[in-house]
Image (tube, rainbow over all chains, first blue to last red):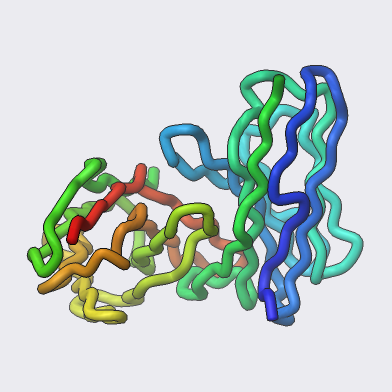
Length: 114
Length: 115
């Protein structure tokens, strides 16, 4: 059983389009996250939600809008895609967002902008 | 601010070689420290963790000890296998009261183990 699943796995689209990435966790965790991994493998947090409430919002363009319909889902919608948005996006979850709780990651969505 | 500095590599080793990946951190308070591993085409997986000074995390033959005096959390394995080929990330999470704590990652180190 997949713990953190995100779809699609690959997303190829053109500049200017709008796209969404979905994430679901079946671990019963309260906190979910979105990370961006660039071509050099550097990982940076984008957003964090705890029980559907936005907790962390790093310096991310407002073209990126997370939505959490319930605590098991955290979707990422991106408007007006740009070349620089090409990256691998990872969803993750943790029990309660506490500092010593490990995070469980999905397999990533590879976004390529043409 | 909080930051993690680790060896970036890439590093290539022969099977059964000894592995050390250095990791040092800067943080206020008493962070929790983690090593995550990313196998090709997959997401990150927790490899081991330590939540207080002098704790040793261990898993799959890997070990790391939380050294507060040197602000380090170096990863070691005595004998690597081909299946250990992956990217390794050191990370910290500040332990502040309340709220969600974000992970701060090092830049990752790609390890290739040849037979």
